[in-house]
Amino acid sequence: MDPIFIRDTFLELLSGIPLTLQLTFVAFALGTVIAILMALMRMSRIRALEAFARGYVFVLRGTPLLVQIFLIYYGLGQFRPTLQYLGLWQFFRDPYWCAILALSLNSAAYGSEILRGGLRSVPMREIEAARACGMSGLLLYRRIIMPIALRQALPAYGNELILMVKATSLASTITLMEVTGIAARLIASSYRPVEVFIAAGAIYLIINFVLTRAISLLDWWLTPHLRGPSPAKMENRNG
Image 1 (cartoon, rainbow, N blue to C red):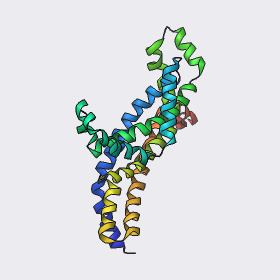
Image 2: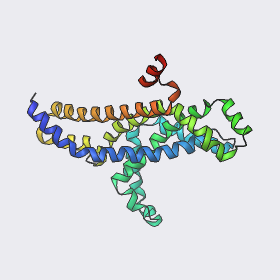
Image 3: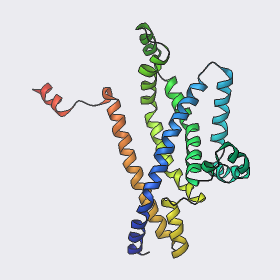
Image 4: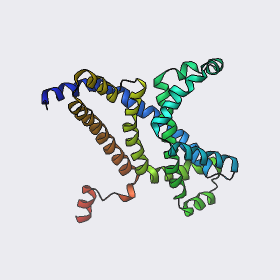
């Protein structure tokens, strides 16, 4: 094992980080929007919406992400005349947007269940108190239910973000040159998979460490009632 080669490979793989992060955050943001809609549909009293959301979650969670990527990128290519007629071919011919779509839909299926758990964990007393103050409908959701639900779901939803970072490695299967895509190219030219994957794994580890710390800080900021007293307050109390 050559440390110099690992260092050089690590530096070369750094060029794939922007695309990895772009895939992660764009897909995660879109997936969050879809997840919120699916969670609300699952909890609605309209049977058609509830059944659609339930089927969506069942299919997307029950099939591998790699299969979903292939179905979108390769499978929909069989319907090129129809997609051209609808003006969608430019979207589905681009591997970047196909990867974004597959990652978003997959993340939304898992995220909707996390958010649904967060919505169901909102204390009824908070809702009743808001209603007593005259809140209802969208105002109740915007001011009371969604903030509490998102705070409750944050730790589990943070794990979904970490999983999204690792899931972007599958985008290399449809020719995208993110970190894993560049690693595959280097392996094909050097025939040294161990060193290359060590460097790639180190990059993913660093990215996920930074994101984990950011999520922990956000969780700490959103739960002031769980924080310990600050040193200044302790000094004032002791004084």
